Length: 320
Image 1 (cartoon, one colour):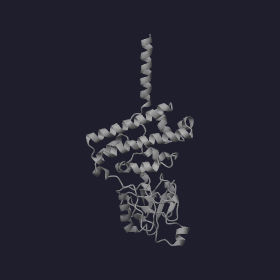
Image 2 (cartoon, rainbow, N blue to C red):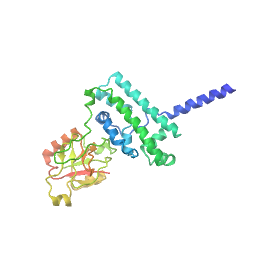
Image 3 (cartoon, one colour):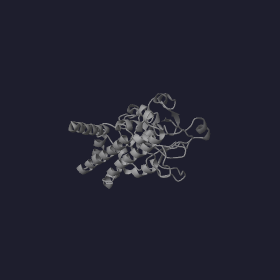
Image 4 (cartoon, rainbow, N blue to C red):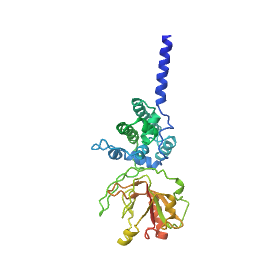
């Protein structure tokens, strides 16, 4: 009888531990990231850590969007990353091992808080969720934010440490180079936006285009009198320098909206706008500068030679 009770207890404990461990299908960010975006995180993980876990601000709350973007890749993303970087068998095994370490860290925190791992991650990625409201006060949420974020950063760092210099070079540079006349700062974490992919102009669309619409939702962009569009290396693509002071004040070198519907109905948009996504924003005082990928920036410049939409300030930002 005692043996039977003991066996039942052991089985219960094992099942309890197993239920706390998530499967690879869980903990996914809101949308898939490209190989370049993941490579950027890998190459710049120390800079990202300095921004999200500064030593002089130990109680800083980390925005949910930035937390979830750093989650380890799902199976499809891992394959995309492997194909892009040409990972060896050993390097693929390292990704698996790094993911298991991340899972262990989440399970430890979940067990401490008497939650399932999935409930913990739901609260971590969405503090306004029912789970977060029911089980967390601000101190616990803040503490676990940092514990899990450290595990995420450890995942990316372990991959970086096993990559060759050529593989690391696939990532975009994290720091922006200030221009000579404008000592503004560096890049924030690149993200994949939640906006529907259908609004982005397909590569097969050849134009001519009547305007430029930049989808910058999710980047914390603020309205400003003189926002810029930048390349990842800090080169300026657009700053509206030809605008008169009166035009800049009355109309602005950029028109702002928060919805795709109002953007395409804006008078500046015209009949055939070119729509691209921003990959990041510059860490400036006014938080107004957006960053485009090299590929999108080249396309914008090529198309602008045909219809001069930048010269005529036919530019619209979609922001939060």
